[in-house]
Image 1 (tube, one colour):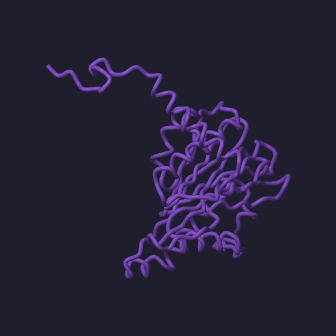
Image 2 (tube, one colour; image 1 turned 135 degrees about the horizontal axis):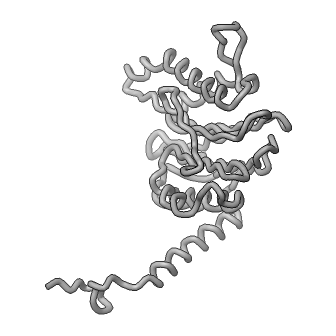
Image 3 (cartoon, helix red, strand yellow; image 1 turned 120 degrees about the vertical axis):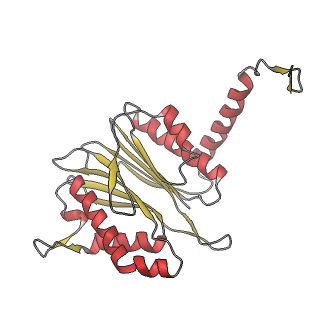
Length: 255
């Protein structure tokens, strides 16, 4: 299991990914799931991966080494794509190429061809974009109304994003809320864990402003976890009890 989130706000892009992978309760390892492809001043692209690790690694290798273009015979990579849309299409081609090679074999051995990717960034001459790409190679894009996308174990972090993030959210606040959603996910699912990789890229900067790994015990993240837990406790204490609960015991008054 994994959890990755991408948030696209007016000021730019926030991407967050955990690093835990597991193939059973006694086989837990750490792998980087947030990958940066950068040409400062020209392009910044970020790929976050979830699903079958062997599949996602094969897809990444195709994107780095290239996939033959049937029209030109040249090798297409993320660095040669003229737009983010074309780059998202290339990722879809890479997924389908891996499926053509390994999909049937996985199914014959009771495996799953399971992969999903978040792909965000900006290429000079185009706008900043954020996509979620499915295991069939098709994809969707964020909108102003829904400025974030998630892959992996998304249900625990989604309510926080729904309540606290919109397109006009300050990019620093978007990072903070994204980290709170990650913490909520880790609290409820042991398949998601540290370290956490984060990336922040401002619109039209064409480079990473923050590319950082949060290790266990980092003071800021520890403080964020403690403050969020305390805020939740204070909030539920401040809310009045339901009018149909009576006494300190909270016994329901049923007629």
